[in-house]
Length: 159
Length: 291
Image: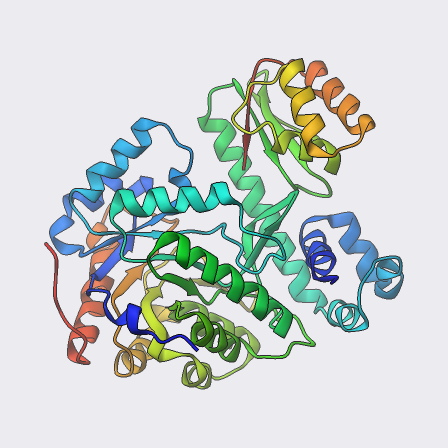
């Protein structure tokens, strides 16, 4: 059954600008190595370009406005985590009174998904990493990004 | 096939609005003119006591219908047991007659787009959705009611068109349909189809609730923004309501407003509430009010 893969490709097309651009330039090529049935491939190849772009643009603006509003209203002791922004997941936080977003890998997002409503610390990060199935490189890069931006001790919120 | 018998037992909840923080005070001030409130379910999931106190205040004054946006009934995975528990906790708290969400795909493990996207209307999707609805209805003990969404496109190579797919799901599970007439109006406007043809194929005997809202046209595209009165370019929605209420025994109608809030509550929402109530009353549905 490849429906989960098919749905994953759809969501990635809606939310990942780089992937969508590659897809629209050469649809066949971008689906080449994916485990999709002929029917699923055909359904993806037939997606209307204009409407696909409109939809992902709407998603981006909705997400952008939401992040801005949340950061404006919230205390600076939270890190907000979204599974997509422009081309990848993102963490968003307030730094020096300004909205800051940092792109992270899909694996790092999986770790943070296990951190929802928890305070960021080495112990909680390791626990989340072990139950997330993410790679060691994702873990190390995430720890580095959180430390570099002074986010240890803050609480993770998903949106 | 499962009958719609459970749906028929739901009492009439009248005409109301979606509760939003921005209009909470105005909503309470006008409680005698609003029959019922619809709440966005996920805003109360895993929230601290003050958020539930806020909800209690409204639940003491209005019948409440929970309406979710993150169920993602089409996702090819199992519904998260924690999510189900949150649904049930909320339903019990507000003594909900049913729980509603959407015919949509919004997330997969590790990816949540935070928005409703169209379902691929295939036999495989149908089986996944039917199994999920059976599980959810058994767990909640009340009907699940699912809404047709606003979508900018459809996914091709499908086995069914949208109304036939929804009819199959309703027939197989006995679940209810939430008919968003504005979504029908906007989708058919954008794709050049006939809204009455869509409605004629929709499972009207399973319609429990109706949604109305106002959208805008920008660059020749009609957007479902929930930001306007049901007037002007949105006026055609009223004809669809006339047509539908002559053929459905609806249990509630909710007017959705998510932005462009105004101080003049009467102009923003109450006039549309009165007009909807008048159409429902005229066309034979009951005109009972709780307050």
